[in-house]
Amino acid sequence: MEERERSPQQLLLTTTDPHLGKKRVKIQHISTLKDNYVWVIINEANHAIIIDPGEAVPVITFLRQHQLQLTAILITHHHWDHTNGIAEIVREFPAPVYGPAHENIPEMTHAVSEKTPIHIPHFPDITALEIPGHTSGHLAYDIQGNLFCGDTLFAAGCGRLFEGSPEQMAASLQKIMSLPDNTKIYCAHEYTQNNLRFAQTVEPNNKAIAERIKHVAEMRKQNLPSLPSTLKEEKETNPFLRCDAPEVKASVEKHAGHALNNKIAVFAVLRKWKDEF
Image (cartoon, rainbow, N blue to C red; front, side, top):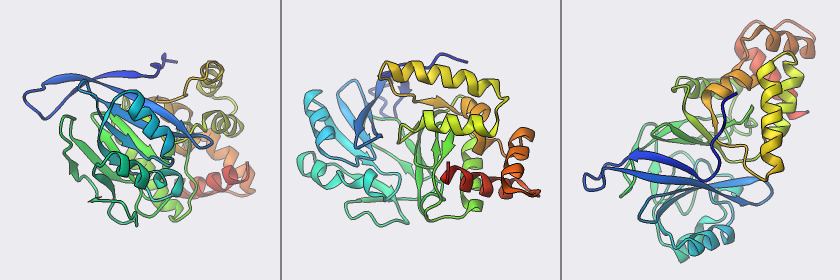
């Protein structure tokens, strides 16, 4: 298994500002609440974009400590653990708030829909993808191959179906799977170890899962995030992206107690199984 980069991750991105050209930005995490990650994208001029601030104080502290100028906030969906910090943060650091056009987020200033180009000064353009299932209007944000996907795709898992259907979630995951394999996956929770235990229960003969369990355990011992992963890694180890794999299908059918005729049926039973795991 490939060696995962440690946080902070250094990326060379191309901005839309011709005076800036190619510049390095950092992607760092702020741990909040029980297991949430607020992702922070920082350019060389100390401008920052933050994603899904469910809690204000750790974010404000981080911005002050690192002397960052908040340029924008991106929100993937309306759940409180992704939005509760917005109001207090923008009082201290006024900034535009981008979020799902089809969800109610009171502090939102820019409603975003599928493939809406987001132009934030001093940063590369960001593209939104609509990925409903966990919530009805859930978005992901793609910044040059770095996907901030909230609670739709997790490392080795996917989100619960609070507002959407199995068909919606499966379609959203398929949309993510159509991205390049080297896409880096930044989800919003540190759920990886539990997700991998479930993945191994579903697919016990998958060697990539066993290797990933060891790798993630070492990272967590060092108090490092298990993220980002890559889409390639998810395709190899995430059962929700592997519903057509023979062992996954057989395990899910055994759990259901009957044959399942298509991938959506397999996905639906798999998701319910994980809910009870």
